[in-house]
Image (cartoon, rainbow, N blue to C red; front, side, top):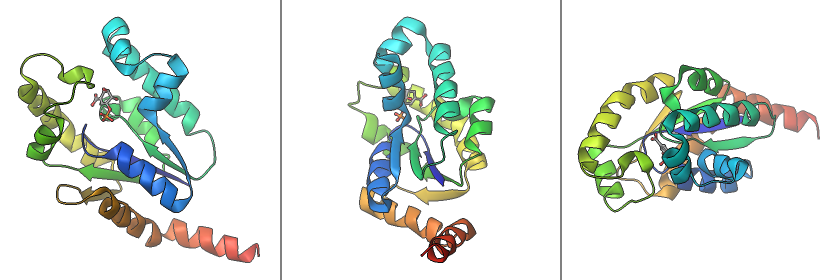
Length: 183
Ligand code: S3P
């Protein structure tokens, strides 16, 4: 079973994903960390030296590999993963695609001192956030199977909300009943 977290930079995908995977006792993959390990380079350097398109190719390659395995997995994606149709097509193989929705004001506040997001470096950080955010919102919504509004929630509360979706799902019922049958 694969549960994928999507959402804008600063929506908490990595922190929530790690905590959720620990709670469920599932594997956890953070795509940015995965790509850094595969390529032996920092995301910042990939953007600087090879450019955004090369990074998007790496995301596609990583998704193909990650989603071909059959473990129970929580996958935290990078915020721009939805900018490629191929990535969205691959992500639709997930059982759950949870959109961690975050208001633009919250994103701006959370990222105001951030120096690690290559797309937000330089002048006009707020304008960059605004244009990326407006261009992407619709795509997160369209791809997601579930949404959690994260603005007033801490990591533990978002984890609880995500777990509710799993508990209520027919896929989960089926998995539990198969597990019971095997005892
Ligand atoms: C990006 C988001 C980042 C990272 C890269 C590009 C984006 O991940 O993949 O800097 O295009 O939104 P986070 O969403 O984890 O910050």
